[in-house]
Image 1 (cartoon, helix red, strand yellow):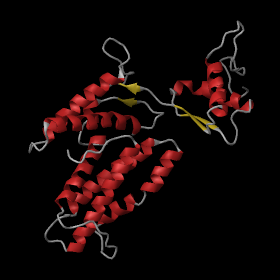
Image 2 (image 1 turned 180 degrees about the vertical axis):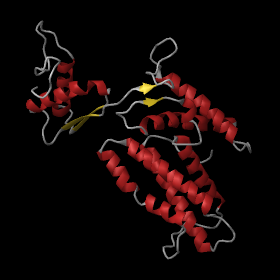
Image 3 (image 1 turned 135 degrees about the horizontal axis):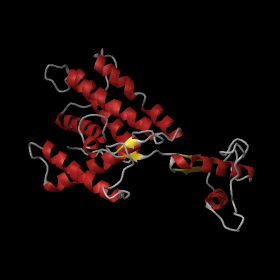
Length: 290
């Protein structure tokens, strides 16, 4: 490869077969591409692999193109990811220096999230079974969101205390906003979500409505760019704008005319459906009650 130079300044080759007859990763990756294209009839190949392997895959993909296996109708993309770091900023390891197992992280996340759910249930409306169920939804969602809300190529710090926090850019914050919306809709009684476009809007209503209108475009862009962090950022902003709306615009106030109540319930309902759909795309559950 003329554009890939080694320490000596000379072009670097991709070794498919070694001089002793052995085969390495290049042979395995090339044969996998050939199989996926011609046997599985794939038109898009996504490789979620450490960013340190970027040069290897650049050479493998180019070799496959020269071989005629990748063309206009078939593309291969490496979704390079960075390193998960501990609170100390160093690569995440156990105290013994071993790699941390995902199942252990999830178990601890669920345990901490369950404690948060139990603490928030001050009116004791949830049964122990419901608390355990919500704890699993919140804990696993927290780990997923922390991973997906950061650009994959960047390193990020793994901090469970922050992940299960109700404040800041966390899945719990989004889940709590969704649960609050469902609570309002349950308490609405006979009032129903109905749009009244003729009404003048408060600034917080207008800001939320305009933001909700961008969901389709954001979801489409995130998918096209393989960038779930863009969808996560949009959802966090959605929850933040809803919180401002909730604080500044009373939804079920008896002082509001019926059409204002209906219009604000419509904004609540649309926000809830947007959060639910967006988080479902990220593989995160949205509990009806927290």
